[in-house]
Image (cartoon, rainbow, N blue to C red):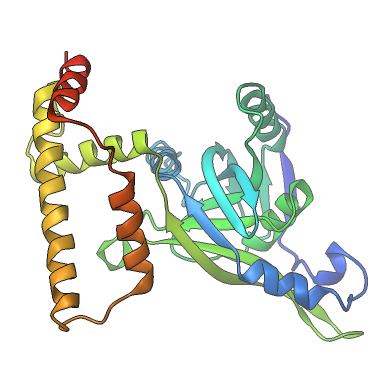
Length: 277
């Protein structure tokens, strides 16, 4: 059985984490606050699944976030649940179990490192500081992600935070969870999975049969036609002076046009037939 480690709920101050107050810290804080967190759908699915499988007496579920950090962007590509119990004055978590899971994941995906932790709910609780202190030892500037599985406001809100020290030099210091920008991002295979899941929203039957190749091509062509209609309407509005031109949109449209492969109808037909089963 994994060893359980208890944390006191005593307030974690900046002095507990590192001594003194460096003049370079404001720049580090500014860098942390400009962080953008990109979360993949599989992470959200895993969090919801862990919440649905929680113990009957558990009010929330927590776990570890895995991913990569690059130039102010934290990309969260995986996660796992960490068994824990919360009491009024302490948090009890199975950290050895968490590290075993992390080591197993590293064997198959060496690029994924610990980037923070997640919790279900719509708020940062009084126990969050002590949990965050542990993850601050495992990685630099850990991210705290919350997913509102209680559906406050009739939607599943997602928020990301960084923990920044506050105070004055030589005085009492503390820490504060500050929100940062969070986005949902997808790889191409994930987009297909998400679109398939969305089809069950309007169906009484919550299962969807795989589509035939030709049906997928027809559906994709229909969507592409709609998108092209939107692009043409935008271009016509700009030319007619009804819409203010946007240089970024213009460059994106030019890149899109230049990316279209040039081929004859015969070449397109051969390519199409060779890729349809």
